[in-house]
Length: 229
Image (tube, rainbow, N blue to C red; front, side, top):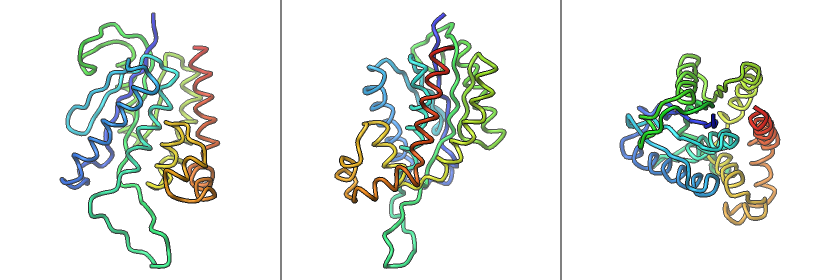
């Protein structure tokens, strides 16, 4: 049977997001879903928001699920609250702290019933994604992948913990650079034009703060494991 991926997630600490910011956060998330669907999935992905702060994303190309999950978290971490202010020395360039994030549970498997709404579909892929999400909530983690292979799961458990430790430290500025690089494949010169910063500053955001080499290595390893599954 054909293998799919489903991402089940929710906003982290969504109740702490001010009322005037909620709509902007959700619209940003919808925009992220649409861009990913257009650029990576040829419009074949299906996403749905439910219960206000939760979402599911059906991905017909499971080898792309990890990259998509990381992009979702990066996009959310770029968001800055309305009228936010961070006190620091006047001589320092303002740091854009990340105020938003998501739990991302990725499940892989077959699908027994495809409904018009993602949340009403059924199958192994939904069960594994749901179980992964329950485990994230229980352990207070933010990234987990569950596949039909126990051996692959054991490896990915460790790699997800390491990647989560990196992503959870991204500031909004770092997340923004990572998002543009991973989604649009922009090089450092192009990013310096988009972000209006110097090329060395882009390099620092990607390589030093974003730990791009480690994140890309994890994505590549995931792709190889899933392709052989």
